Image (cartoon, rainbow, N blue to C red; front, side, top):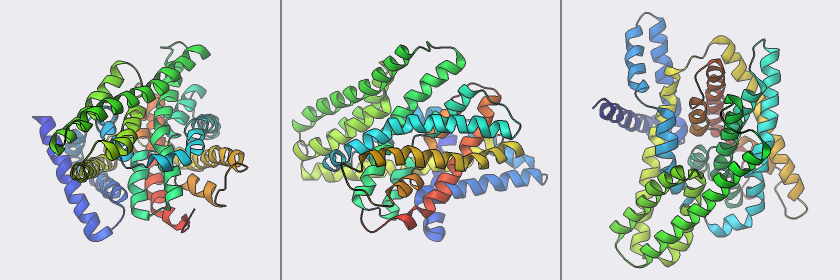
Length: 410
């Protein structure tokens, strides 16, 4: 019953915040909801400091009932990734395949190393201590761009098609790669997993390649079911089964659920949409998944704004978070710049593409969820505080200003 009341409260807040944003702020919904939630959280913290701690305690108790990591990574993420991938044109994706592949793999790994060593240096200079392996764990969880934040903001700012597919394609795939790197490094940090290169390579193959194969299998199986009927209620139910059953299956067989959902979504959004659905089904399917996407996005970013009530962000952690923002941006610039430079002889790029991809590489709920999954301790508190500050800056500042960098065509 408590969970039901908490869910009802979050939906109510999402509706209220959406109204306030649409009526008064008129910001992209993801940004507006997070900022309103953040403002409410800071107000409650201020009231607590002014001698009214009971209000904050009640809010903390309500928010504390929600396991953010489980809610996002094992609940909402599958729906959000599938909904986002459903509208990606596979021909556009194929034209940008090498850029997307390199950014989503090598780019994440390069960024992880740069941020990890950069964090180790900055933390030491500020008189704090965090083992290098945990700095690399932080690099892994903060390096992937968040498809949920990216997709929501790109819809609002009207990015050119070729640039949108680069950013969207990378963000849809690199979170799966980032999770694999995160799992491997966390295993080393906690000494709970084999640490040799062969076991890490095997983990990557099983998670990433297995996720692609599972996604293709889910897409193909559902395609044959969809092609044999013409009833939009049943067909929508089949896509729901792909998302919920497919993600659960990926977890059971230890493959990447995020990658499987993206592949299945792209498959059904292209091959399935063209050859297995009537126009009526396509219309209803699009409306259904757009609505699911909007509702879950609203809930997610309200939760992000309220999550600060549960965090222990002290003065030193605040300073550390601010110091890490330029380090993370520099790592993003380098990890994007290298692939683009290597590919310039094969294809043309806009002169501003590195700058745009750097500033448009938003971090969001996935990074926070991974940080929350860390074992209890000083390392978790420090990493979580830095991560949350980077996410607030990324969505609140980068997300609001990315439109100014966008050319009319790329």
